[in-house]
Image 1 (cartoon, rainbow, N blue to C red):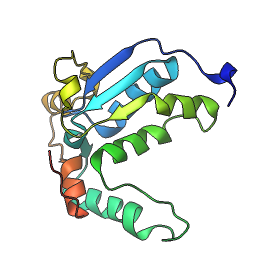
Image 2: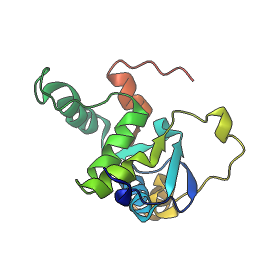
Image 3: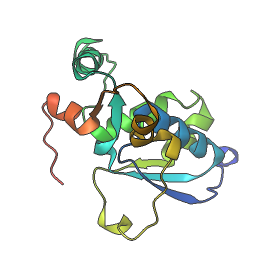
Image 4: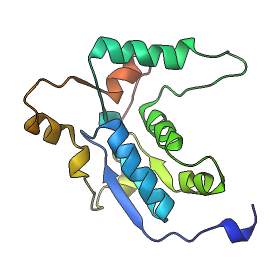
Length: 157
């Protein structure tokens, strides 16, 4: 890529991923990355996927383990931070703008020491607690950490 495709970073946004719905958080982050912000997401293992546990695990087991070929792919990550980044990648355009925007997104398990004293943004419409509060029916969900443990990942914080 030549230098004319490198867009400047507008600013840095720190997002706490705790109790955010995976798709809603990813769409917010993808939009901000395309606008030019650099985004750091902490607590990516505490992001939730809505749905009954058995259904969600069956869907992701097919997506991660059963689909494709061991040699050619598609290769899907098992770590929560990389799963979140992969979902964000799917919401970005498949051209040079999307490639540059994805380089601006950083996902972390837990809170790194260099980000402990930062001010974190929370997207109110992406929180599962708001959805539970406003809904009259039961809403099932599973954390990305539980999904990763199901696939044999051991998370050391």
